[in-house]
Length: 129
Image (cartoon, rainbow, N blue to C red; front, side, top):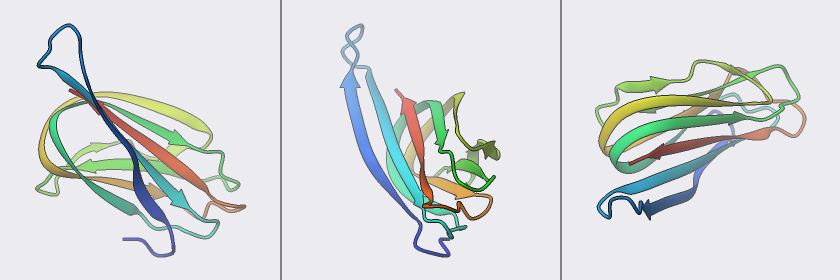
């Protein structure tokens, strides 16, 4: 639950057909979680997905303070199916997964402390078929 004015929004949702098989679709969902200088709460974005999650990419900006960023993916039964763990600032992390999903999932993004400075945005990319 957010404790300040931190936000998360779906910044893109793309589905594209693969040429090798006309029935296969590749999808990507991008979520951007913005934390102001003093925000410390988790933010949650609920999105419908019907497919196989294959990749989670976590981009943690160069926050002013020495904090970490984290993403968790919860299925429609509120079971955590992916957890990046706390990841250092100023880096991009790529995780390969293979998780079938159906229904609405929650993307939960958090920080380990106040970002400081002007804050920043953690970006999460989910890719699958």
